[in-house]
Picture 1 (cartoon, rainbow, N blue to C red):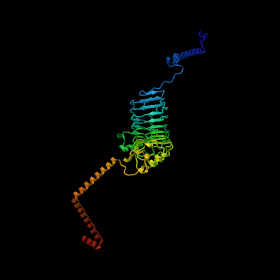
Picture 2: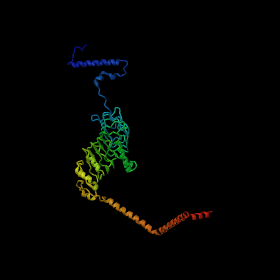
Picture 3: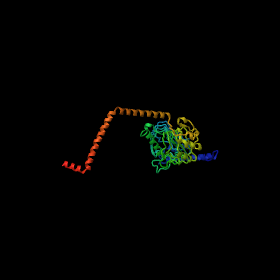
Picture 4: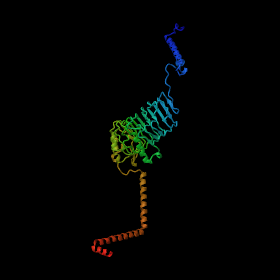
Length: 426
């Protein structure tokens, strides 16, 4: 062989030439095999050498309506008028943002894919006009940790939305943070009117949060700006790991039905901008029994009467409320803007504590009722003769009726009159 006696500058070059020769021979053998159905261009030695010994797997496609970053493992489908979740989401996605679209229903198995989206940890579905979230909508997402459904007018949130289609057999959810801020539907879309619709809405949310043991690991729950009037019973019963609860900017007037006793890991409770007027001893005792909790109560219309004395005493002694120096009276008018920590027992009484607008309303109501009574008496006076005649007629009718009864009684009581009456009949 002419090239056998001429070695290259190094031993590596000789090994490279031998490898190339072997590849050429393999190419000839594959080209001459009768059973081969692969085109010769796909097994060309030159093509194999040009592409390297090992080719990387092909990159996954990005949905047409989305922006993808494989390096950041993030997919964003923002303001694209999507009607459903894209079907061709890349399997590498860890952070998925589908916001500002036109999806109205999130069906069961909305994120079921092959291969599954096993690494998806953060899912933001806020502002999508969602009205219905079906049971099992978030199944097949074993790594989901953060879910945001805020700013969707939910009229139908399934009780098994976070628990799978059957809470009794499904495994607990991996969710750690759940954001349900401003999910209350407009008043014209609520069932059974305004108040009844709000009660139904509160019950729907409560059912989804306490279904089975799905949310046992939930650590953060935000329910701000939902117009809640009361917290439904057992709303927090199935959330033992909760450490942050945000209920600010609702319309809560009382916490009577809420129990915080089992929230032993609770660290922050936000109740700012509600309609709380007083807090009862049972609630205060539960808060005091939680080891790490901080409660925020600013911007509530506190009524400073004798019923708030226990709250004032508790605030002066506790460190549970960091913003207690900001709490001020809203009623009565003479105590408006006075700090709760400045009040003494002598300042608190239970006189009529009505705002001027309500006082004016009650005065006006009294005047109207008095006017109606005067008109009624005037009508009676003008018809006094007719009323007197009507009374006489009733009296005469009653007298005649009673005389008839009396006559029959005398006949039945005297046997002689009874025999006489019988003979006269014969």
